[in-house]
Image 1 (cartoon, rainbow, N blue to C red):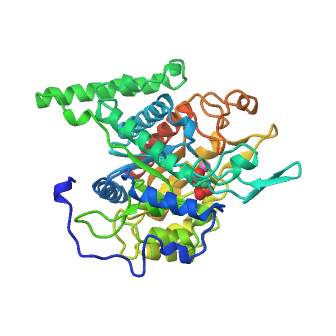
Image 2: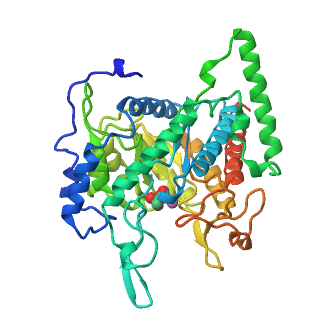
Image 3: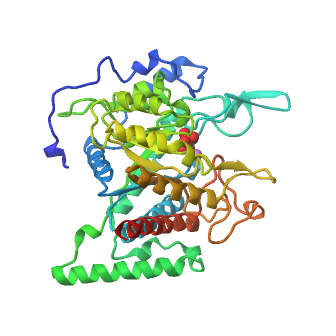
Length: 464
Ligand code: PEP
Ligand code: CO
C-alpha cells in the first residue's frame, strides 16, 4: 500500500479511549520517576519527534498477519530478549539480520510459504521484572528494568529511573531502523546473493552442509525462473522487515501514539507490532486499556495460567470486531505444560470463531537455573514445546502460524544443547545476555529446520 491509496474510513475510535486513558487504570511494571516535571518534559519532547514507522507499513503488516491467519504466510518473529544501548552497533545489528534472513530462507524453501519477518528490535528496551527492588549486602535499590529506564550496575545513581533515557532509546531505535532499512533496500537481502548473509564463524557448523544445499537449490530455482521470465526478478532483491517490541513503558508508548492525515484512529508509530507481556495482560489494567485503542496489529503473550474465559474476554476487549490481522496470541506455556494447558484455549477460540494468529514462543516457559548459577533454556525443551504445539493445533483443527524466538547472530553459549550439544560448562564461555538466554546462530537455524521437518511430516501424514 502506498501513501496515495490509503483507505479513508469514518472515525471509529473505540469508545472512551484516548492515548492517555490507561492512566485511569492500574499500571503495573512501571518505574517510579523521582522528578515528575522532567518526565512530562520528556514526554512533550518525544511527542514532537518524528515517528519510527508509518501507518501504511503498519496496515501492510496487518494484512500479512491476516494472510498468516488463513495459512498463506508464516510469521518469524525474533531478536534479543532486551536490546541495550551499547549493542546498537553495526556488526550486531547486521548479524541479527543475517540470522533472520537465513532462517526465513529455510522456512520459505521448506514450507513453500512467504515468511513475514518481524524483528524484536528498534525499541525492545523495557523489561518486566519479578520484583520492584533488589537487595545486596543490606542495600536495596530499584530493579534494573531495561535501558529505556535505568542501568544494570548496582548503584543508586545507575538504578534511579531517568526519563531522558527514553529520548536516547528513541534515537537508538531510529538508528537501528535506519540501518536495517538501508541494508534491506540496498540489496543485502537479495536472494541472488545469499552469501551476503554468511556469518564468518559458521563454516564448520554441523548444519552448514544442509543449509548450503538449500541455498544452492534456491539459487537454481531463481535462475530457472529468470530464464523462463527472460529477465532478472527484481522483487527478489529486497525483503520486508517489520519491527516489534513489548510496549511496556506506557509514557513512552503514549508519546509515540499519533493520528495521521487521511487515516482514522490512532497508531503507535514507534513500532509496527507492539505486544503485551504476560505479566501485564490483566484485562482491567493499563496495558490492555492502552492497546485496545491502537490500529496496529497487536499481540498478547498467553501463559499457562490463562483460562479459556479470561482469554475470550481479552479477545473481546482487544479485537471486538473480530478484525482479520488485528490480534495475535503468543502462546508460551513451557514444554511440560503445553499439552495440559493449550487444548482448552484452542477449543474456546475455535468454538467462538475468533480470528487470531497463534504464534508459539517456546522460550519463556522453558527458563531454568543451572547448578553453576546461569539462567538457561534447554534446546530439547524448546524443540519439544514447538513440536507439541504443532500437533496440538492440528488436533484442535487450529493453525500455528508463527514462531517467536529470542536469538542473536553472535556465537553465544546461553541455551543448552542443539547440534553442538552445549553443556553447562560451555555456558561459562560466552554467556553475554543480561536478561534471558538466547539461541545462538546455529541453534536458531536448527529451529527453522525442525519447523520445516515437523510441518512436512504433518502434511505427509494428512496426505497419507
Ligand atoms: C519477553 O518476551 O522477553 C518476556 C518477558 O516474555 P513474557 O511476557 O512472555 O514473560
Ligand atoms: Co525474554
